[in-house]
Amino acid sequence: MLPWYPASWREKPARQLPAYPDPAALADACQQLGAFPPLVAESEVAALRADLAEVAAGRAFLLQGGDCAEDLDAQGGTPARETLRVLLQMAVVLTYGAARPVVKVGRIAGQYAKPRSADTETRDGVTLPSYRGDIVNGAEFSAAARMPDPQRLLRAYSASAATLNLLRALTQGGFADLHQLHRWTSDFVRASPQGQRYAQLADRIGEALAFMAACGFTQDSAAPLRAVRFYTSHEALLLPYEEALTRRDDAVGDWHATSAHLLWLGERTRQPDAAHVEYLRGIANPVGVKIGPGAPPDDVLALLERLNPARAPGRVVLITRMGAGRLPERLPPLLEAVRHSGHPVVWSCDPMHGNTVTSSHGVKTRDFGRIVQEVRGFFAAHAACGTVAGGLHVELTGLDVTECRGGGQNLGDDDLARRYTSACDPRLNGSQSLELAFLVADLLKAQRG
Ligand code: PEP
Ligand code: CO
Image (tube, rainbow, N blue to C red; front, side, top):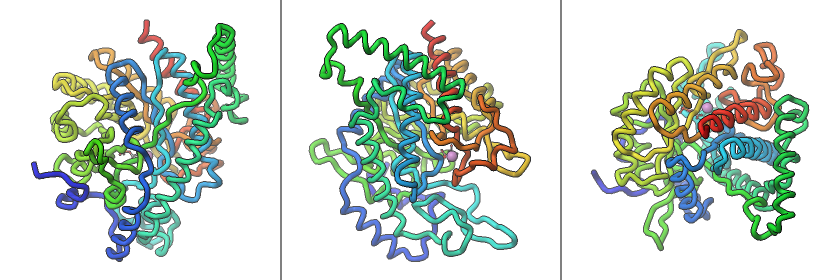
């Protein structure tokens, strides 16, 4: 294989990259990015790899979630704070149920690029480039908004830095303190059955904390209760952006992507000989790969050899998104093949992307029941194969949106129009997310026996 360098992906065929009308302007934006500080530190990336190695071994659980596509103009940080809030709640529910640590990773602070199934979109006889995420163009259906604009790379970097700053402030500054459990519940979730179940759990944990304090655990010895480690991730799609933020650690000699702790490859860009895999193979970060129902096990093995020839645990997360219907047929042969190969992967379940349907009003949605069915199927397949059901990957928001059907609020087609704010795929809202966490906690508890 030819040597790797941050731009070696340019020698390979690349799918899903926008056609910029002014390549010189793109190069100029990338040059500016190259002079900016890294967004994450090498030591944090190493910590995540170590945490994921624990997940691969079955001693921890991975929770990854957030928007399908983040909004560059997100109002005052509210969406990021609410995503963090619901992820912290879910993590508490899972930690309690699984009795093992939960590794928390947001689809956040950089999730701005989207793959599309078509290059163009036609409305009322007008054809324009597809919306490819805020880092590329605008969602509004106008020729001006849909033109890919390199200045957006710089705006995406700034927005990522600002979001990261907020996340670091919240997770280190007291907001994530386990003594604040009740405060993580948003008003609209509080009254729901999930909110009440969560309140009972929070009471129980509160009693345990009071007991520990009475036993003499001090502020210092109980430090992990007061702050959490929270990691960021996004799809590694816009390679010029990722290349510009790739840095070499002088002490270690490794190259790192510094736009986020973990990057993943989408279902549409994981061809072993193409540009996106080429970029990811050279960075030391943990990498995810989405695996859909059409992936032959041999292709997945080729990909694992390419991305992790050293077979380092904590390096690769395989995120399966089969669809509830096809999972029982497609997942078991894959689990078997990877287990047989000896590759130490983290298996994570994305129950969202294989279960997207269209409502009777023509709106993209997902049924909570199908999402639950895929998660149950995932756990059952791993139990049967003797592999580790290691994680959950979900599109969610802590906000009170109406994008997915079903769940405790029993949302139907007519409800979807009320608060559908996703620029791309439908997300679970705060109470649906919590409901899913309780279900997964029960599955993990059952596993403990
Ligand atoms: C996504 O995670 O938003 C996505 C596009 O997923 P996939 O690549 O699995 O379709
Ligand atoms: Co999506």
